[in-house]
Amino acid sequence: MNAQPKTQNPSPNTHSFSADVSRLLDIVAHALYTNHDVFLRELISNAADACDRLRYDAIEKPELTADNPNFRIHVYKDIETRSLTVVDNGIGMGKAELIDHLGTIAKSGTAALMEKMKGESDPLKLIGQFGVGFYAAYMVADFVTVISRKAGSKSIWVWESDGASGFNVRKATKDEESKLDGDRGTAIVLNIKDDGAEFLIDEKIKQTIETYSDHIDFKIFLSTPEETEKGEGQPINKAGAIWTHSKNDVTKEQYDEFYKHITHGFDEPLMTSHWRAEGKIEFSALMFIPTLRPWDLYDPSRKNAVRLYVRRVFISDNIEGLTYPWLRFVRGVIDSEDLPLNISRESLQYNPIIARIRTAVTKHILSDLDKLSREDSIGFNTFWGQFGPAIKEGLYDAAEHREAIFKICRFYSTHDNGEKYTSLDDYVERMGPKENGDQKEIYYISGENIQALKNSPQIEGFRAKGIEVLFLTDTIDDFWLQTADEYKGKKFKSVTKGDIDLGDKKDEGKTEETSNKHKDLLENLKSLLKDDVSDVRVSKRLTDSPVCLVAPDDGIDMHMERVLKIHQKYAGSSKPVLEINSAHPLIQKLESLDAQSDSFKDVGYLLFDQAKIIQGQPVKDPGAFARRMAEFIGKGL
Ligand code: ADP
Ligand code: MG
Image 1 (cartoon, rainbow, N blue to C red):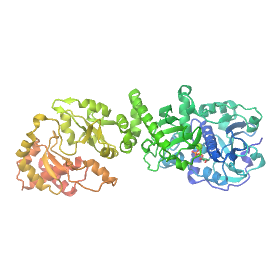
Image 2 (cartoon, rainbow, N blue to C red; image 1 turned 30 degrees about the horizontal axis):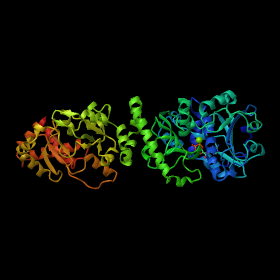
Image 3 (cartoon, rainbow, N blue to C red; image 1 turned 180 degrees about the vertical axis):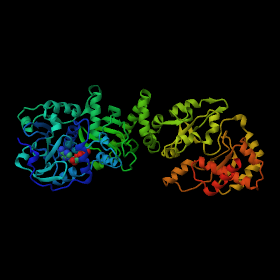
Image 4 (tube, rainbow, N blue to C red; image 1 turned 180 degrees about the horizontal axis):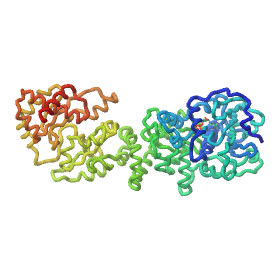
C-alpha cells in the first residue's frame, strides 16, 4: 500500500483554480479553525452524499451497484506514507466532474463566505461560520489525491493538488486504482502535514468520527476495503438514519451534529422538532430552525432546503412545494412512507401527497414555535428577530395557517414604549372594556423605524387615552395587512388613516361643534393648500402637536402607499388630510391672523411641510421651506 507522497508528483498542473478557490485555499491553509477536526466531517459528508445519490440512481438502474449493493465508507491511515484515506463506494466522479466540482466553488455556503470576505478586513474570523467543504482537507494536508470512478463507467481519473498552484487531472495508476472499493466511487488520499499528525492515530480518527459523523446512514470502517472484505473491519458508527430512531434514543449532541451535517452550518439549531406522523399519511420528520439567519434569506431565488427521503432513500433537497416559501429557513429531513420511489424528482412536486405533507409539517412547526414562545421566551424572541419578517409572508401566502401564524407573531407597541414584544393575544386581552366604551379595533402605525413611530403625532391621542398602538416596521407588514386584515374578529386599523373613534361617547357631537367654531380657519387652510391636501379638519388624535397628516377614509394608508410604490405594486397617488389641533396655541394664533396676509400663508405652508417631514416625506419646495423657517427663527431671536 503506497500513498503518493507529495514529492512524487511528477506532472505539471494542467488546470488553475478559479480565483475564488485560490483565495479560499490560501485562507484555509493559513487560518484557522481552532478545531481542525471538521475536515473529516466534510469529507465523510461528501462520501455520504455520493452514496445517497447512487442509491437513488440505482432504483432505476440496479446494474450500477452490481459489484456491491451495500454502501459503505472507509477511513484509514498509513503511517509509512503519512497519509489518511477516505474511500466511498458512492456515485464517483468522471473527468469533467473532477474539474468542475473540485476546481470551482459551486456550493452556496462557500460562495456566501467568499462574498462576505470581500469587504472584510479580517476574513479569518469569518471562516468558522461557514463550511468550506472539500477544501477543508488542506487544513491538515499539504497534498491531496482524489481517485474516482463514476458508477457505470470504466475509466478511473485522478485529481491531485498541493492546494496552492493549481491542480492536475490524469489517468489513474494501477496502485491508485486498487484503492477504490469495488467498481465505483472515490478514494481521497491526504498527505498529512506535521501539525495534522494526530490524524495518523486510530483513536483520534475514531473519536472524530464518533463526534461528527455518528449519525451517517452508512457504515464507516476504520480499515481498508480489502480488510473489511476479509471480515477484519467493524463499523464504528451506528449507521442508522437518525430520524428513524425514537426521540428518546437521540441525544442533543447527535441532533446538533446531524444539523451541521445537513446545513454545512456552524451554528446550533435554535429549535429541533422530531416526530413521526401516522394515520392518513405517514412520514418521519426531523426539522430544525437555525440560530443564524442564512445570508440569502431574502434572495428570491433561494430554494427550500429540506431533504426529502422516501423510505430511507434520499430523493432531493430541492422539491418545490415541500415546504412553504415563508418557511424557507427551516432545515431538516422528511422521510415519506407513502410516495412512490420510482417517480421522477420533477413530477414529485405535483404529487398530492407532497401538499399534504407540507400542511402537516407546517402545522407541527407552528405549534412547536408557539410552545417555544411559552417555554423559552428568550429563544423565541431570538427566532422572531431573525425570521419574523419571513414568517409574516405566510399571513397572505397561506390563509389556512393564518390563525396559527398570528398566534406566534410578535410586535412592538406603545404598551412597553416599543421596548418589548407583545403578542396579539396579549394586545386583545388589554383592549378590555374601556371607561368610554369598548375598543373594537387593533390599532397600528407603520413606518420605517420604531423611534420615528414613537414620536408620531398621530398616536398622541391614543397614548393620552391609554389605547395601545402596535408599531409595524417591517416592509412586509404593509403587504399582509391588505389581505389578513383581522385577528379574532378584530380589524386592524391604521391610526394614520381616516377618521378615528377613540371611544369617547361624551365627545360625540362635540367635534362637529368644534369644527363649526373653526370653520373659517379650516376653509382658509383648505384653499391655501388645495393642491396638496384633500381636506383640512379638526383632529381627535392630537394632544401635543399642532398638526398631522392622515390618509383619507377611503384612501390607502400613507406608509403603505409608499412601500407599495417602491415595490411597484401601486401606481395611484392620494392626497392626505391635514388635521389640526384646535387647542394648540399656534393654531389659535394662526386663527387670529388675516388669511390674506403673508404671515398666515407662511405659517400655513410651514405647518404643512412640518407634517410631511414628520411623515418622512420630502417637502415640495425645500428652498421656500428654508426661507420661511429662517424668517421665523430670525423673528424669534
Ligand atoms: P458540497 O458538498 O457542499 O457540494 P464540497 O466542497 O464538499 O461542497 O464538494 C464539492 C463537490 O464535489 C460536491 O458537490 C460533489 O459534487 C463533489 N464531491 C466531493 N466529494 C465527493 C465524493 N466523495 N464523491 C462524489 N463527489 C464528490
Ligand atoms: Mg461537502
